[in-house]
Image (cartoon, rainbow, N blue to C red; front, side, top):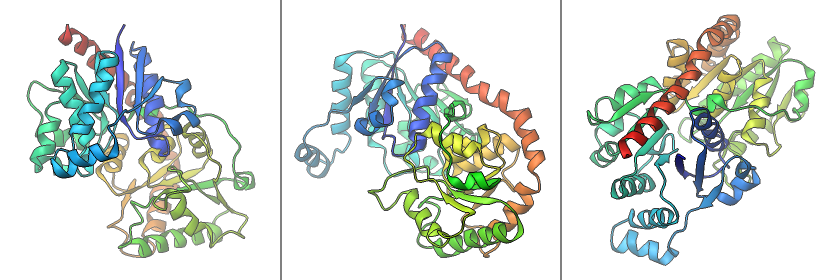
Length: 393
């Protein structure tokens, strides 16, 4: 039986990470892979989310903190502790594949855990897979990242912009594939809706600290306020703020950014806030009930796209640009970057002209594009895992 280890999962506080795992398990099963194990940096929280009902979960076993400090700061080898952790994993059972599920890991500093995955795969002749990734042009100029990328047996890019970049640096014998993010296959699970949904059609809004950064934050927030003012004065719609990365303990999560917005509208009955601690499947249901959606978090946008909700992406990286381009044929009008918000009405004008007024066109595009678009990852998974088994044999 095929055995797959899903590696590099940081935990389900980020509902996008939870969505990747849940949907990946579904895609793999549809592709003939039944034996999966998840290795998590936050297994306790994953279990609270019920992720252990979908896949067995194990925690990484790392050396004591003092040992990790010696390796990193005295011996200048920050990868060593990750290699040791993967050695412990391999001793307990040899998988057929090591699958790295960190979609945009290579966009942030040095992914030491990924380096260890490739090291372990090469040492034990286990095919490694970079699954559903987005990578920007920095990969072409950073030799360390570039060399590690070239060690994967298979890479599945989740959008065409990343695919074109990777074509410039992967080895010729390596298999590079293009398919949608697995979360397009995530199921939605019915849950209680915020009260604002009972007042009529609702526009969902998601913001993240990555998008509302300190430098441009004031202008971005002014754009959101101007949009809300337009909705309240010129339409009958309600607005619901929808976090997708939940944590009341950390100040850099969606909940913190959206709270700053909501405190100005707490007495407005047409403004709501999704405060319940929901799973990614439940949040997807809430988003699916929106008439329109605006989202900074990629997986909040995927929830909208995959349930047919006309949506505007607020972009801070290549992934939102690439996904929109692959669905609509262009990202022009479907994605708004931070840099584009030079005036206080940019968000309102873009949303009204390109999303609200083109609602039926967008819904028609979803109907025509989405079936084949979603099927692509099933075919890619079959190709990866079938060929990997043959190669290993």
